[in-house]
Image (tube, rainbow, N blue to C red; front, side, top):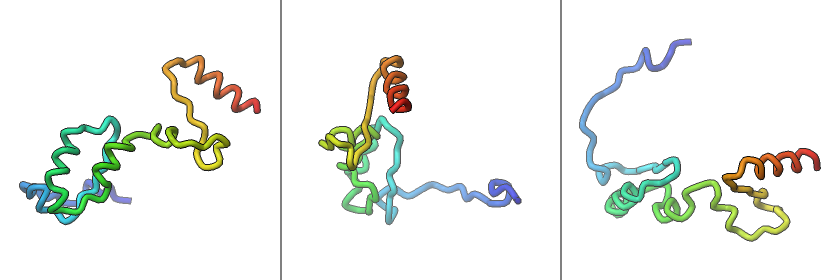
Length: 98
């Protein structure tokens, strides 16, 4: 099997301003840079942004779903967040034992 990077040719050129693109698919690892989101706000009327900018601001990490009420964990898995390693190890140990 040939390595793709060895057989393709890249075209080097200056890109248009973001407003010149038809679609922007925004995908970023947290923390989201507010400067980037503010910039995207400035072009949202000229191009389609696949991931809603306001949604990225509000739900920009995996802990977001922990804010929803689901006491029996029917829809949302139990979520534990801590800086205390022993606490997390205890959660894991108790989960494996039960």
